[in-house]
Amino acid sequence: MSAPTPAEEQNQTSETTHLATQAPAQIAQAEPQAQQPQAAQAPVQAAGDIAIDDSNSAYSDDLSTYTASLTSSVLNFPTENGRRYHAFREGTYVFPNDESEQDRMDIHHEMILKACGGKLHLAPLTNPRRILDLGTGTGIWCIEMGDIYPDAEVIGNDFSPVQPNMVPRNVKFEVDDVEAPWTHPTKFDYIHSRFMAGSIADWPKLVQTCYDNLTPGGIAEFQDGDFLLYSEDGSIKDSWLEKWNVDFEKAARMGGRTLRPGPHLEDWVRAAGFEDVHHEKIRLPIGLWPKDRQMKEVGAFNLVQLKEGLEGFSLVLYTRILGWSADEVQVLLSKVRKDLESRNIHAQNDIYVVWGRKPSV
Image (cartoon, rainbow, N blue to C red; front, side, top):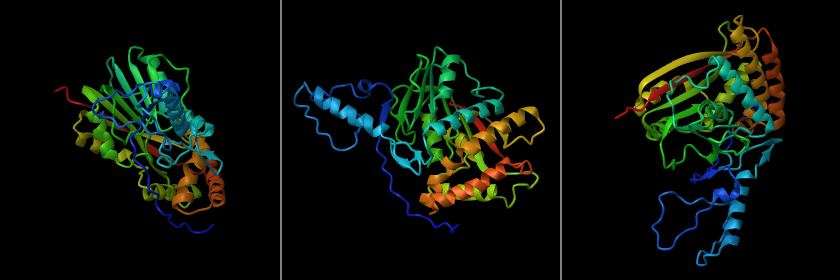
């Protein structure tokens, strides 16, 4: 296996785009009016240059072409090394969005529920009217929240429109970049962010944006981890699992992302101006080694989701940033999986749950 060498960093576009993952007609339906001042929100940009002649009020053909191209730019998922990735702002998020990854996300959701005592949120909520879930993934959290709070409007956003169509009537999904300027016309009573590690370039800015988009008295809750694995008995030391984890964290850092936002969440939340800040750290074992029954169940789910996610977590970071070949990555991962299955390795990591309230006045 050759030594990893850094790859050149790639420039990424930062256009502002906000699309509802509904039927194409719902994506672009408002006709421009003559002699109107320019709107504050940047117009949605389709892939490529599409000339739209707005001198004629009957431009349905042009609009259809524009909408079709726009939809294609979001749904035309690229593939690399056998895995499928998001198309919107391609390359910004380095983990896949294919069916295997979606299955892993749902397993991960169940793991977090067990670790949090079956609760979808730890912050105290009282009849929230508008709820936003950042980086919603498969949308499972939004769907369950929509059932629990039927009078609330629940919105989930993500780079990829992979969420199901059959959802509660009060739930909807959008394709959006949470690090771009937010354009929601109405503020939220509760904003939820869970496991965005590796996805965010500027965490303090994101936390501040959440604060700015809450109603007075509104709550933001962040559940995120420190994904540098450890073992209290030293059993992970010098293992292939440890080597993978260290290189994985290094590659994410070189790519401008952190896999360790959890320990800093409380500081960022307080700095943004939140009050009544609460925080707690929850241990996530990997495997069946814990004696406690609940922790054993959490460990079982964590083992499955990590084994299923190893390839998706690793391929882009190792090949694009560390300069490994895909074959070299697969050889390493086969050794890491054996370590994960070993009862002699007692690996774990921590998640941090932090929530705060925006002052009422």
